Length: 314
Image (cartoon, rainbow, N blue to C red; front, side):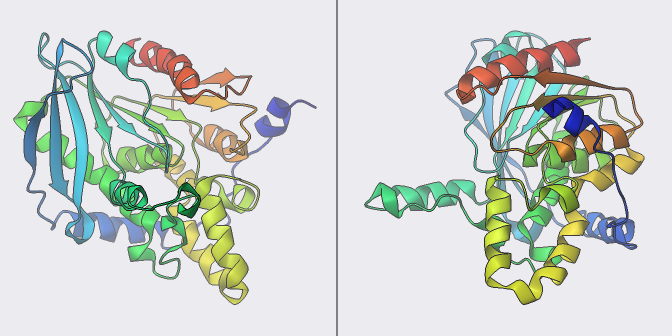
């Protein structure tokens, strides 16, 4: 049986969904609205494309953390459709040149805490002293409202809030593109907003955790599993807490047109969660499959980027 057949036979199971899952998020989304956004906009010199103006936007999220996104505005065509890109955890930036050449506005979100860690790592004298990953997913596993995935979900919603608030970002349609854990962020942003045009989920992760958590070799899984290995007596509580952040559960009310971009032979990603999510969503949906794992991040991002353009344009 092929890898596709194995994964395609993965169907969603909601037995691990907490009874108060919807109430938990309803209350936290309500609390988020009480936090002042207080955005500031600074023009950047680097535009990536001569037809776009580039801006650095700073705004406040949960615990008054200052969030940052880079916004590329098409100065030749007002109210162009906007693509908001949520990157994967601990990943390199994708190639967006063709996205801009097609005339889209583009917002690239920076994940909280990552730039501070990179600055910290630059100050280390030896390369071998740098940790494999940032370690954020191993922190506060016993406190849901202070867990890193909680912050990322709230930050995704807050990004949509600031886009809608500022006239400078006035747009025809809002499209979401998420990669890995960023795809989970896109699912939350869509869950909290009823006017998203389309969503592209690239190798969605942090999804169907009952099946994927122990077998995935992603950075977030390694961090969580490393903590559990040292605190085996807390495993049950940790698993219960993580269930509040399982991206699979956003599928139950998902109604937005969606496309999946799935790399089948990725050595880092177990795709059973992605296929379970695909089956769970009842909206108009399609899937792009990439059958050979391309080692070059630059090359694979260009391949997927073309499908993103095709999906959002049609």
